[in-house]
Image (cartoon, rainbow, N blue to C red; front, top):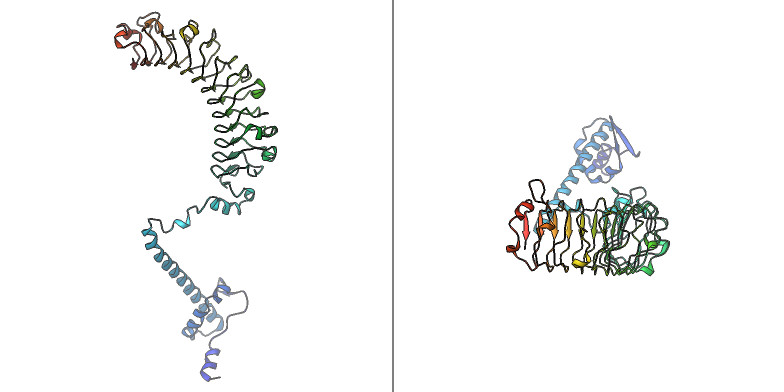
Length: 421
């Protein structure tokens, strides 16, 4: 071996064989240093004047680490510099890949793997770690029910093509509070009879825009909001809604219901009932007394029962547009009830303005056959203290015009901001 080589090897101490070495108060792992071996050899000659082997090793280690960090930073800058022109030319943020979601389930799936209890989320759904009791499966093109973890309380399955809900579908999901299945292809004969039996805490059930021909059996008595509109339901029986004392909202509009019998009698807490767009020929019997909003538009109702609105204590909105109502079918003073705020009787067959309460604020009578403006329908007495609170009155599309409005109506209807004839 040449003398100069031997001399160089003597002045170039080898790195210790242990996993780390002590440099003052700094413990430096050696494995990263081995990755920078080339830098080690290049710098060893430059510090040959170090007198002791230990000092030499520590200085060498610190210099090597500094060079490695510097080179790593340079590589990152070079990479970003190369990426920037391309990204800008594409109209994108060059660092967007650091924080944007790459694909459905990519972000949530990655985090779930690191989150306790998150690994049970189906691949086709999202289970946000920030909201671990919710599962989002909406708009995924699903044709069957996914597996539902027992921890889920809020399940979103709307806008899919699901046709059936077997009894086994929610056997583990007994904690469900919301179940959103609107805009699917559900059939009544494909919903198990025991599906809802164990969902004792379910409060919201959305089944609108499906292919149901009847209300699913054994609905939970805990329900507060049931939306089953835009289906093909033909009949509602008392058994369908039995024991649902907590139900406050019922959407049954746009079905084919022709008979409801006394099925609504048990709904003691109901405040909003929408049964518009059906085939009803009469007002359902025994309407819940706590109703706040009653919508009966677009049916075939031609008459109203005696004392139709007399039993309600909180009713404010009644809409019966697009029916077959006539003057003979409306008993006297049917709508002269305190508390009513809005009454819609448009698109019927009325020839006279019915008597309404002075507290009524909005009255819609357009597109009837009204031939006379009867001021007594609004005010039985007209003076400084007795006048109608009516703000909106629509009479357009009838057989009268503005000349038929008596001059004294300015006193009776002093708060009306809009009268259309």
